[in-house]
Every structure is written in structure tokens, then in C-alpha cells.
Image (cartoon, rainbow, N blue to C red; front, side, top):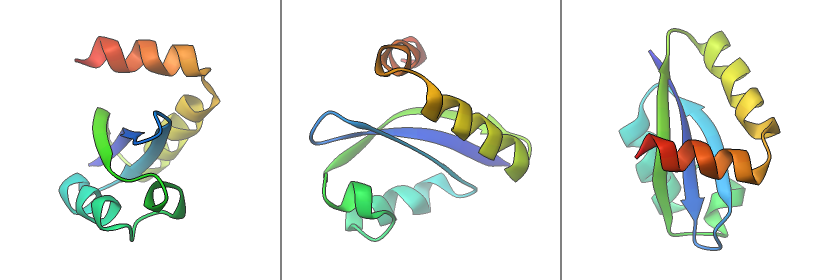
Length: 81
């Protein structure tokens, strides 16, 4: 099982990624070792997640989410709560 997730960074930006171990990945983001983007924008907060059956599907969904406008991403995040 793979997870596509979004984090809200300190500056309000949204970071999108995939993982097969969300808890471990969030710890790495919080520690500043998961991504250069989030390292400079800590703290981060998980605002969206969705499960995908395999890595390939998760990568395609991540790419689709990254192509969304900021408004569409915010609508997705607010609908997820």
C-alpha cells in the first residue's frame, strides 16, 4: 500500500509526496531529512492523504495533484477534513 500525501508548510505552501510508511516519512520531514523543500519550511503539518494500491499508481496520482492549481489543492484539502 502506498500513500499520496500533502503537507502544509510554515510559509503556507503545500508539499506533495508519496510513501509506503507515512509515520516514518512524517518523522523525517519534521527532522528536516526527508526533503530540502520542507527542511527550509518547517514545521510541516499533514493535511491530506489517500491510499493507492501500488507505487506506480501513487506516482501518477502525485503528478496529477502537483499539476493542480493552488485553489484546487486547497479545495481538496478542505474537503478531506
